[in-house]
Length: 377
Image (cartoon, rainbow, N blue to C red; front, side, top):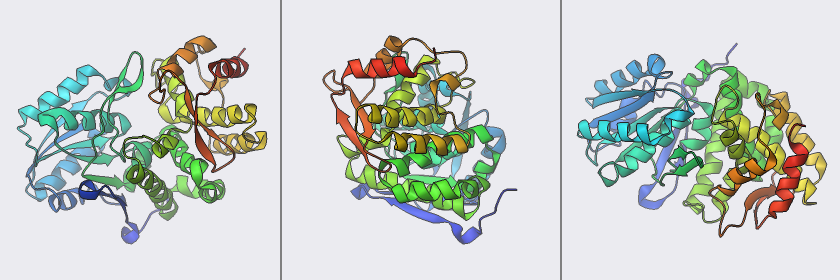
């Protein structure tokens, strides 16, 4: 049974970016309250809402009604669901819809959906009229704790994930925790991988709390809100210190270098692998690779693997259906990673739980040898 959080359990996390600062509101009932929250912050009175075919039947009507109740004029665009929507084709579609709706700079573009819709819509908002106001209403756990916060937007390329995009911060994030009750268990688990990531980066006490409390987080209620708020605060702190990933923000990519390569290897087929599952496997690989490089104890990797497996996440490449290409092909995908500088590989490695760091100039030969060792025989 899903635990219910009281209405007064709502939390606010502030992303401090000077005159571009914004609030992340976290808690129940925020879609119903969206009109009031947006109207109090929006100078314009028009909104273009972008969502997908999975989310629209669940929340679009209620969201539009909340806007109408506050006198906000809104139009909507429903796109296909799935990672393949993060494409030039759909970017053009969103931009055309925003311009056709005559959305001005003081109006807003809203992303109502998961990470795919948020990334795509944020990119369109950032380039339409050379920059429109942008509001995130994330409907997946992964989007609530990660992609909706921090201003990274973009689309995928045949060369890799998220390689085309811009930084465009939202003006508001509304993370309605009630909507997470409609997620499949697989999607909730995938989002949880990003929650665990924040503990593994530099919050060992949070990771220890998750090891004890993950069932309560899955059940809902105040434990879920606490986990989301802690995750959002962790990301907000990093973004405020390093908005454009010139240093510390790269730590948020723990597990992502391996994970993105695995996603590319599966052609972004969600039946085989979704993003959070790739991150889960990627984090385990990052800990195992750190141990191989004599940076961390193998016991740390075993602890991380055990927790992620406990919640039902995949932790090894042999759990990906349909097989994987050889190590050199995965290496090509890794070499396209956005963190590569001057042709040198950059990984987020670790000295232990909560002790992640940026490792520059990781030897390619070591990575290939490691991949050959870990790939299914």
